[in-house]
Image 1 (cartoon, helix red, strand yellow):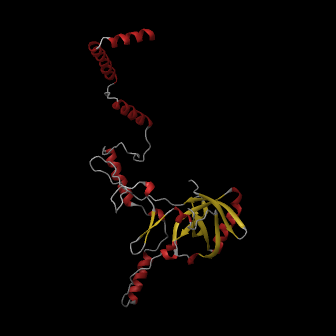
Image 2 (cartoon, one colour; image 1 turned 90 degrees about the vertical axis):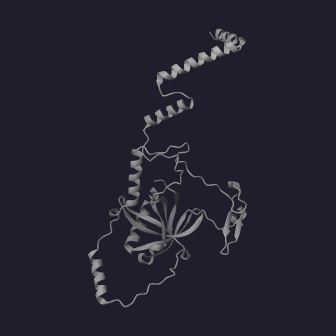
Image 3 (cartoon, rainbow, N blue to C red; image 1 turned 45 degrees about the vertical axis):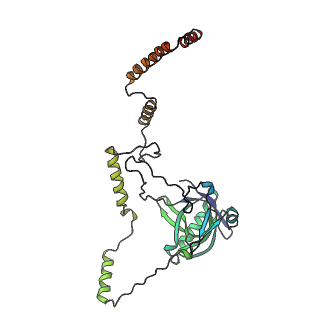
Length: 304
């Protein structure tokens, strides 16, 4: 893993130098829009909805759309006035009971690794969080914007590590516009529901669940690759994700280079067809003009 941020966790007078790593990655299946006939990627032009012309990147600005549909264009001077920060500090604001943090508030997760000099205070903070069963509410600047987050301890295959999880702002949590109302619930129905819960009760083991959709897509794709149902285009930039055989890649490169020169597949046949072509060209030149062959003959003598 590669560190995406370096800074320090500060609480009181204690500072813990740390590195930040993305703790999650998406394996969601994504598809490209392509031309069914030849597999070519479908490109999208940046077209203005007002004038209908294609717009260059240099002419694209940032716009904020108001609730009534009006567009406010912001220039570089406007953006320069926005509050940004490049602080490298994860500042602990308070330690709160773990059950007070609504999981819906949590957004992205990052692992914190201490520098060599910060290993001991890192371990002390980790143990303090565990024994108190609390999370540290922090403020941190990521991508020049300050956000809130929490520090908590997570058990991994490599031991216990501190995790930073950024949080959504309060106004980013939506309130449902519906309510659920039911009639009277009988005691026998409640008891049956409890029995069902007890029957299905168990411990959570995440690896028991698999992404059946992604696995099935992979099977279908692999079957098509084995069956030769692959479209290769000049703009292809990715392979199927498998390790490319070097010898095969070199062979294909040689074939492509020879094909661009108009050569055939046979080895000796290429040379045989190439030499007569040169002789035929010389004979034609002799018939057309007598001076040109004379110059060629002279140049050969000088070269010898």
